[in-house]
Image 1 (cartoon, helix red, strand yellow):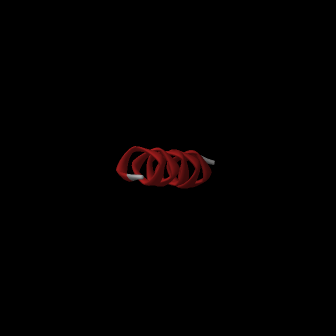
Image 2: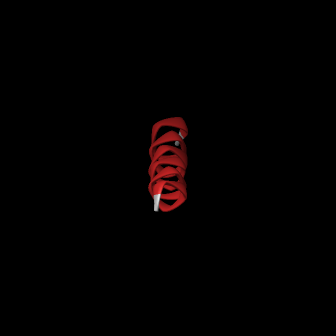
Image 3: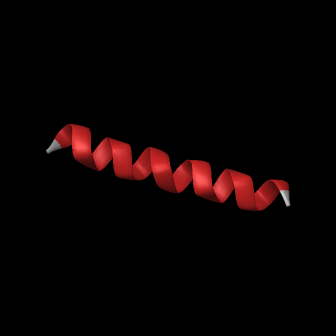
Length: 22
């Protein structure tokens, strides 16, 4: 359960990073 939350958080962080660096 918790691993799924970590995966979602990591994914959102990656997306935010890509949007910021653009």
